[in-house]
Length: 233
Image (tube, rainbow, N blue to C red; front, side, top):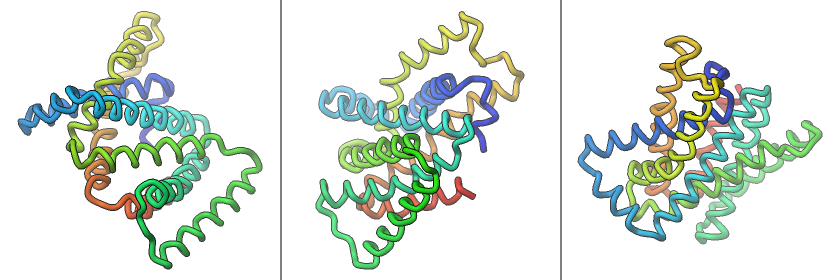
């Protein structure tokens, strides 16, 4: 419901704003909570930095495809993507982490899989938006589950968005110079809404990161049916 308000910025512009303002929000939280050392430690660890950079790329691609879908009349496709996502997440939990499911959970997932097949056949084409959303966020969740034991949710997201910030900021500067940027051009409300994408983006991802480091990945996957149901409605 929020992203159509930002439509003048275009999908890439919206993602660039999400990256920059989310990074600033996370940095502010780290400073206020006096946990800046966690960010420095994550950046100093090359393996962890590379892993979190990959997570940042995955979530940015997820954001871009999601916003594109919402702004171009494919909200049902985005909802389908997040119905497929729990299947991908649980599959990753079982195949890569060795987690086990109860019989009732297998039945629930089987029902979800049948529903996805029915909806996909009804769409009548390859749902590339849905598949991209499902797999990018599925692997993002796997990374957050693995790194959650060594880095906090705030420090993790701060690294992910900081790595992407130079590209995002470069795009925003280029758009501003070219006269195609939306920042400050469509009234105070639009500008405020763009800035607020930092909070609107970071808070859910921080909560997700906090959950992913505390819960089995299969449990996180099952809970993710809530989001697409709300989107679908």
